[in-house]
Length: 194
Image 1 (tube, rainbow, N blue to C red):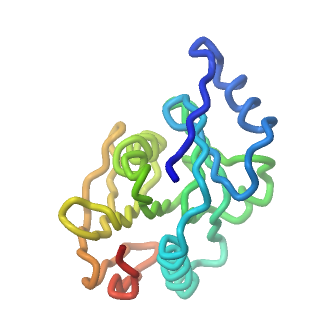
Image 2 (cartoon, rainbow, N blue to C red):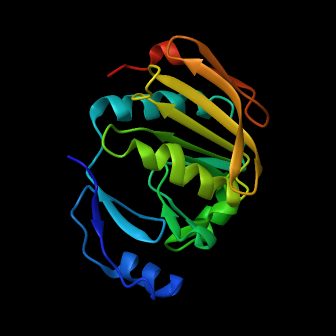
């Protein structure tokens, strides 16, 4: 099943769009994001998708400083890109997250991780990294199970405007190293393929 998009008035303000996102009744278990000003409703991810996120999360917990926490359902906002995203994994300061009501400013994130789904991989490859880079998120890890050249994990960093520089590209089976503050090697051979 692919994502469903919900039309809105292009003249709507960011605040109106967020209010619509917050107040609407969405299907239980779905992931609801605003991508380039369009409300997008995606079904719950497949089991393999969740296994990859869980394995990354487990490795991150082994090195995470006390002031950072891992979230899998926390929304982050990039108003300048008309985006409200729910990364598969978000690493952000505990204090700011504890004080947030519905969403965080994306600039607070230290790391975001997206694991592609077949039907909406374009969002993770194009729209989300542009928004994450523009928000200044230092690291973006894209685990692309559906990459044309075969399953890969790509770590992006050094955001400039709305563009990241690829720091590390690992085919599934190769190690992937996250720099400080994580200083962590992720074994991508643990990731289930399609």
